[in-house]
Image (cartoon, rainbow, N blue to C red; front, side, top):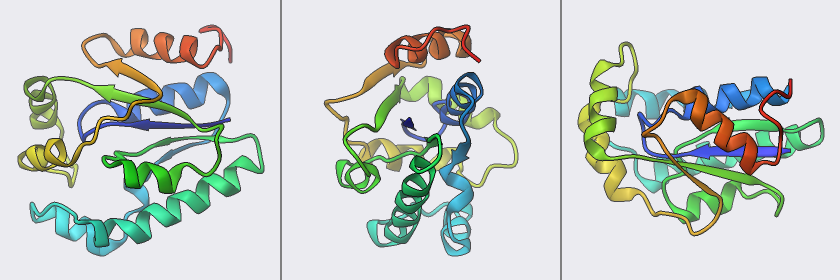
Length: 164
């Protein structure tokens, strides 16, 4: 089973993705950990990435998903802001998508509270400007607790919440 949790920075992709991975006994990968050094430096300086910056990163993530599929699968937390990015990550028709959505104000407050993350709160507007809302997958409101979000995600995946 391959699951990709998407959304702008600060929506809780890592929290929900790692919770799903634990519940489903799958490996968890945070796409942020796969950015090349140049991308991290650019974002650390407050500059948003462009498509050219993202392409090698997205292709590396697609390869990771293909390798993971040969085992039991995986959960990937990845912004995947544009449809063209999601198409690169759609390594097969069986990929399950969970898209985290929330208001800019709520996400802004969350981002301001984060410490030691290279994605600065000031870049949130560029993420919202880039976001292309998909027409497929679960659109999950972040206006609920992580436990509620995890339960809703497991129902979407047709997995009992108590499974582990």
